[in-house]
Length: 385
Image 1 (cartoon, helix red, strand yellow):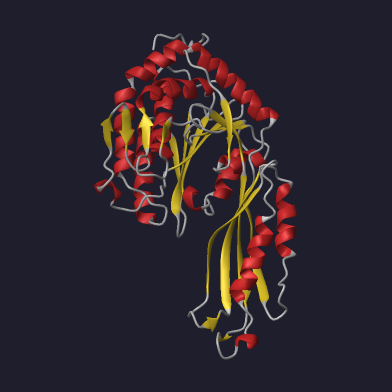
Image 2 (cartoon, rainbow, N blue to C red):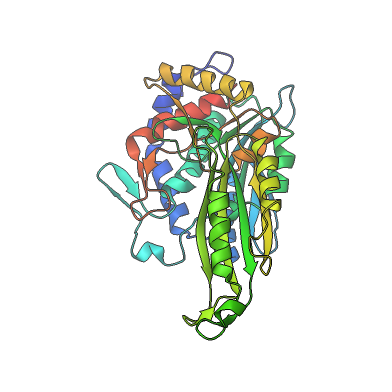
């Protein structure tokens, strides 16, 4: 790279090295994408994680595989010195995707129109390849003076139930977390909403809709009342949303329905919103005393609030980006990531450090090639802090 080990690292040199490594980065991304890894297929996810573990070993990483039952395993790979005064930096990502096996037949991984296309390219296998490439740049130049921990899980897309304890335990050992999720447009993410899921079940009384109408207690009607109630808790000015997204009930068109249900998505901008929403759900009561309501659910991802520590990380990243010729902005989003967990612990967390593109979870999922090298150089620069 042409950088003395005891000198400040000029970002232009890192950017040049990242450009030289772009073909290898693309090939690594392609190989990860071709290892299809839907969250609900443990064998497929574990195969992709095993490939990543081999990649980490080739770079000299200290690899540990955390075995999970019923979910994809979790890969922990450590690079750089194992001892030192500074806390390690955590690179946080996942290798599971929302795409079922066989998607590559209709969505092949291919280059075209300045993009790399394919299932999981943006969310987030390119981001994982960027992390490996950033580590490679620093290792080859003997510049990694602070331990970097790469943690890749296999169940992020389905809530991180199995991996969350590992994420939180390792985050507590680290001084900063960089999440390899896609950028928000061109911006890093300094805030994310928390996520909750609730289910409302109504038990009514079945009856013949023509002969014994009055004897029935309509579960669907009771559910409709509940839907109106919970939907009214949305406060767009505060960024709090309550959305009933799936519902069902009834059996036949001539039967007063005895059962109905709905699933509710909740997004909260602040941690203090969680207990208040939970109390509201617990307080739901039926208008028809012949019906009963059963309400279950909770906030399963705390919000990633914009903290001072995260702002410091963003300002540092913005300055490094300027040194290689691009302006980095910050953004907030309603979607969640594993960065929600680390930020809620008080660990400075900067999200959206992965690839730039569009179409996550959509048929046009793709990564913009022009941003891969500069964003990889930025990630490498942040590992030296």
